[in-house]
Amino acid sequence: MAASMARILFLVSLAAALAMAAAGPAAAAAAAAAARGHGRLIHLHFFMHDITGGPGQTAVQIVKGAGPAHPAMPPGSHFGDTTVMDDALTEGAAASSRLVGRARGTYTLASLREPVLSVAVNLALTGGAYNGSTVAVAGLDDISVGVRELAVVGGTGAFRRATGHVLWRTARMESRDHMVVELDVYATVPAARSPPPPRADDVRPAALNLD
Ligand SMILES: *[C@@H]1O[C@H](CO)[C@@H](O)[C@H](O)[C@H]1NC(C)=O
Image (cartoon, rainbow, N blue to C red; front, side):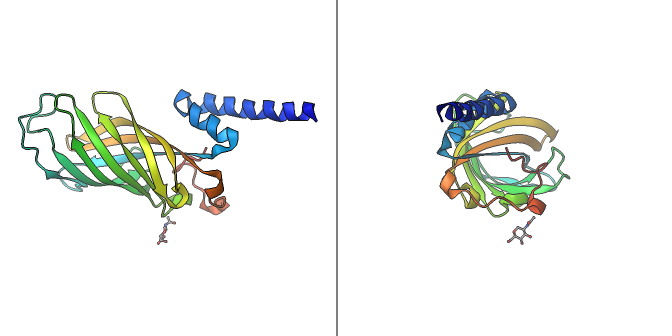
């Protein structure tokens, strides 16, 4: 009995260690919590297209900051500048790749001196097993840093009571007005709230990588 329990615990730690090795240290804590039975870790990976001008514009400035010119942002930027977005989320980095959702929310230039945006965005998913579910994300986006970490503060549908974090990195600039941002979402949802497993024909692992 004790021996079989020890074996089960060993297998659980092995699974957690393998998950950490695969997902990197950023996801390790969430994977460990999930392994302890506190919830289920869901990993999503996709690209966000923030297009602030020109054809296909998806982000529009709604507040023009009234203060002096911002010292760390492109000319014309001011503390308080606020943009509303309805950005496409795609499976791959190309804008033409499969649409898996929209990123709807706002970002505000909220640092007096540094190039830091305060982001509040809802990821409305339409692809794969999470069609109709949303993930609520909030945090700071320091555009001078390679990888930014924002918080998963909640969600709806499959992401009810979600907690976790999002790794957010600029993948490339398609043009001066079109930034492609790569998002890795690590959300833990309570085990009791887990939705039924997706149907086999509903799973599109390339679009929404389920860990
Ligand atoms: C997602 O759900 C909506 C509303 O139920 C439906 O019209 C749409 O076809 C679904 N999309 C996919 C990709 O399953």
